[in-house]
Image (cartoon, rainbow, N blue to C red; front, side):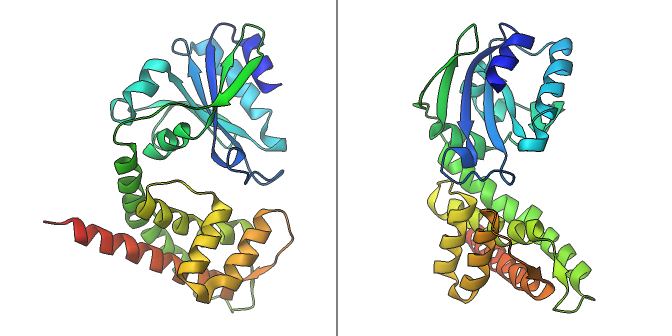
Length: 260
């Protein structure tokens, strides 16, 4: 339905659609997960198309946003290093010249294992597993994971800990935030060590095996991700922040091991 409407309001633009992320790895949950796409276009987007496509993506927010990045075939093949900005949809909002976000090696790695569809003139799609491969993508995702743990998650953890400091252990905390802190950094550790992208739920299993003292918290975080109504407290968030610190420490050790 989304692709048909996309073709109707911006005819001749879409060439292929590549589904990546949770929808591919069986970790998509209604009302919780978004749908991530790489939208491969035959040309750059015109201003009038940006307006109507922004409305289209915005209309998906209530049922789970359809997010992603718009790239030409030439940009996708050239790889990340030659792209500074691109039209991207984040939480259902289209930004014509967005930095970062989907413009990382993680997206290119996910494209390799994504589901790709050729878009016909009426919006019909013939789907098949992606056969695309990109040089240096494994090296790229490892480097991204290392840097993200150090430059994004480390200061975020310090800030979250300071905000949490005055709150009693029994205070309730937001489940979305708890899941994000408990599962996100561990997912990056898995990528740093294996070069592969795993699902958020799988990162819970990965982290529980590596740090078994957090198995109960991680089990509840994964259950919450599937839609089960789990409650979390400030004590849980402090434990998740301790786990975050362990993940950052892995990146620090990895960085030191690479110095000459």
